[in-house]
Image (cartoon, rainbow, N blue to C red; front, side, top):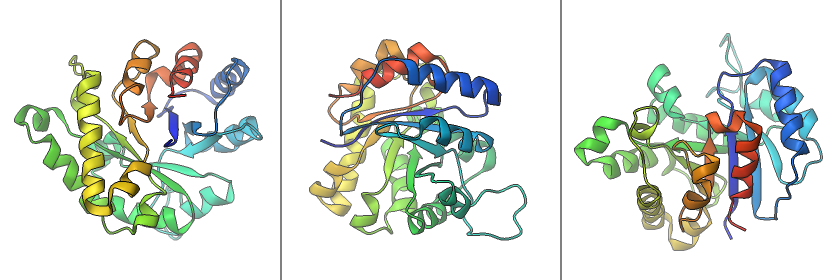
Length: 254
């Protein structure tokens, strides 16, 4: 079975003390992860060392960064390199989140550069893709997402691609009052997998974990994760609530 992943994206939230308390509480909840299941915590840069320490020795639990820069090192004040992250034992980095694309104008080519340097340092990208409201309303979401994949990932070899986790974000259904159904989530996940299969073959596509990033909560996680092409979630607000995220972890396919 493909890796089934519950990924927490804390975004720019929590003080250090609040983050420590949240991790302590989640660790204390009764749970066990099977070999094909993972919990990943994408924490703000200042909290990576703390999270690594808290989660050390936990089976199938990892710390991720929420971003990185596209260069190895240099005069880039305020940026964080994958070399720095690797030196701290970080194994995952979220790339191309919709907020990074929207607020910081990160292009598909810029993200391709970030993907490349992550793979050079054996760090797994959690690559985000997805369409905004105007694209969904125009009915051109498939072409929009296909272009994101093509311009950021299709230069990779099949071996490289299998080191990547994809997260689909229906931006139109996040904070807009509109709701994406589990069927709509499955439809796009299946489309993404079909595009990967067309480029790399069915075998490769079948091994890629595709997460859903559209307001996953305890109340809908079982239904969404039950879809055949949905392999877990990239979770925002609900990952800041102990009971919510613990339930989301439990909702992963067994």
